[in-house]
Amino acid sequence: MKILITGGAGFIGSHVVRKFVKKYPNYTIYNLDALTYAGNLENLKDIDSLPNYKFIKGDIADEMFIAKLFKEHMFDGVIHLAAESHVDRSIADPMAFVRTNVIGTVNLLNAFNCIWGEDFVNKKFYHVSTDEVYGSLGTEGLFTESTAYDPNSPYSASKASSDHFVRAYGETYGLPYVITNCSNNYGPYHFPEKLIPLFINNIIENKPLPVYGDGKYTRDWLFVEDHAAAIDLVFHKGKNHETYNIGGFNEWQNIDLVKLLCDVMDKKLSRPIGSSQKLISYVKDRPGHDLRYAIDASKINKELGWKPSVTFEEGLEKTVDWYLSNKEWLNHVTSGDYKEYYKNMYKQE
Ligand code: NAD
Ligand code: TYD
Image (cartoon, rainbow, N blue to C red; front, side, top):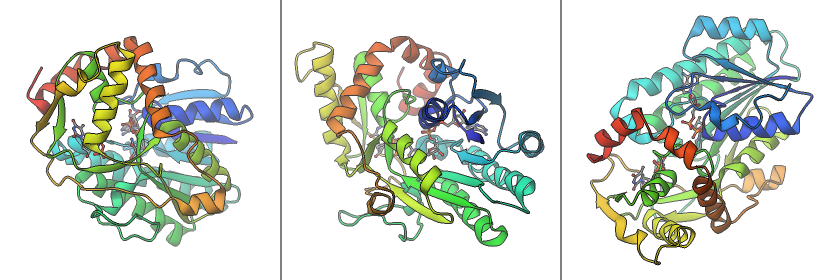
């Protein structure tokens, strides 16, 4: 089996590539990635010499390149993770999100259709999406697979659009697809622009921790390796033309999560308990900030037997340990362009 994984040099993609390359030596895994600021081949250096792994540098928004690549390799399956993924960047530059998340996805769908259009037997197009397409919950309720889409940020609007295209290709052309909508991930190799890795890096450097608004916004957090395990399961066992919600059964208000993280970091860095919490700094809110995301993951649990394998406390400790033992990785990704991004975003060095 030849499987194309897009965005494999990013955070979640690198965990998925690693899992597939190691677990399925009889598959050839092609990792297609444009290596944007978020893509980093260092994330895969432990597996990149294995014989069933191939890296291809390229842009999914480049229609001709994608069409040619699919004709050349005749991929049996696609696991599509490549995306612009950060809400704050989508507010600053929505068009980059339309280009990669919408146009890039449609290019992949067209190319897959073009090579297999007459015969989709044993073929699969797996689209990895987010719970953010459902919009924002109030204090009650959970997102289910039948919750109506109601995206609020340019990021979630672009992901919602890509989900609709995938579903439409299933209805119109019979494309064999599955979609998963997952909650917030955390873990090793997470680029330090998202809440948890940004705050870990700032605590290490004794910099302020910029909590948006009142800090009462709520997210459901899942350890990235549990997401990769769910992707493996859905790719192999998920039903065609179905969507599955994936979540951690693990809701946290941002401020409570940040305080827990501060305490874990103090312990690991042998600093007096309470010192990192002093870095908390409430800053201007994100425009259109979704109040709460929470996932009902009972479908994937009942139908495929998936559930998270680690508690949040365990996952957070593993994550912190990883960042503290991979300072070189952190130094690399926070040099260069990152400094400019940070200055523009947070108005601080
Ligand atoms: P990421 O930003 O860490 O990685 C994205 C990867 O895509 C990078 O390696 C980047 O180089 C690559 N890429 C970007 N534009 C490209 C293009 N035009 N052509 C080819 N490659 C390109 O993202 P992530 O957090 O790993 O998210 C992966 C997927 O999972 C995304 O589709 C995202 O919407 C989805 N998702 C993420 C989360 C989360 O919490 N991070 C939760 C649910 C779903
Ligand atoms: P983030 O990690 O960007 O994920 P998403 O917006 O996709 O859920 O943000 C998680 C939560 O943390 C969200 O409510 C915004 C908040 N947040 C801050 O308070 N400060 C920050 O510097 C960042 C990046 C996020």
